[in-house]
Image (cartoon, rainbow, N blue to C red; front, side, top):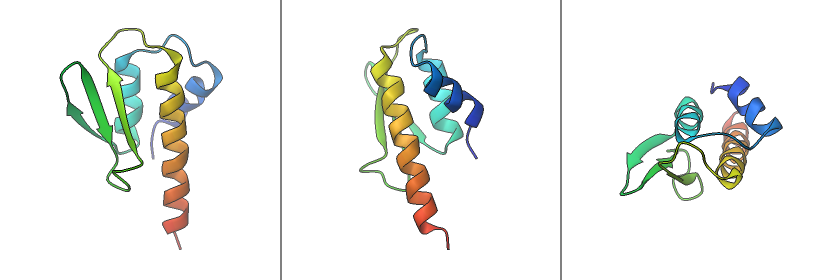
Length: 85
């Protein structure tokens, strides 16, 4: 499940990541991608209202995008662990 190595690297250092890195991370954890105007939108089917992120199409992104990705994947893991018997 998911690219745990990439997630761990992002947790250690939140700077210097780009749109392609976040795409790889989100898709590896089962998020669906939709293209918007200047952004990509990632939504997870487990909870489309809470597990939603918008990522600008830039080579280098502010750390807030990575912080959001980490928070959403932690939330996803919580949701999945609650649903497992």
